[in-house]
Image 1: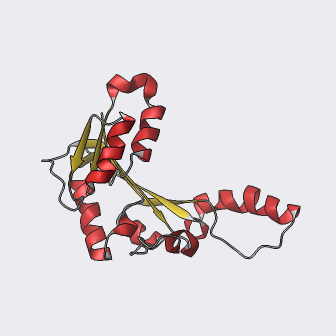
Image 2 (image 1 turned 90 degrees about the horizontal axis):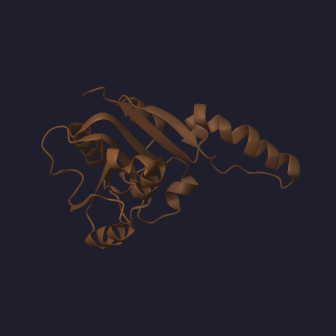
Length: 180
């Protein structure tokens, strides 16, 4: 199958996919797309991508359903407007057969931690598009220091973010397309 890493950047997500599928490497092709030639140079050094393509994700250079699974990890928040972000997601869905996975910051701390984060996405934005949304991590809350508070935060509340994504620091959004 083909995994398309949209906005692959330096290649960290492609590298993680490659590590996970290492034993079955011949059964999976990883293709990276990014708008930055500098990022693609760095990704090339990892030697995990079969192809690296310089392109804008809002206008992908593929005809039809090219990828089995597409990853859009830490990308949509960098797009200048929600309208353009929706265009990007539509384009990724156009070239994907089975599944699209999107990750993006949800909490203010994760979002505002980078000056390049220009568009904030909420759980409902993805649910309206047919994505299942899960939370990861825990948005910062005011905590008293101490062992009990730390245990509560890490072992009770963080796992809750999976089923209550609005309390998570990041969102993982998955859309099953079910096309062969």
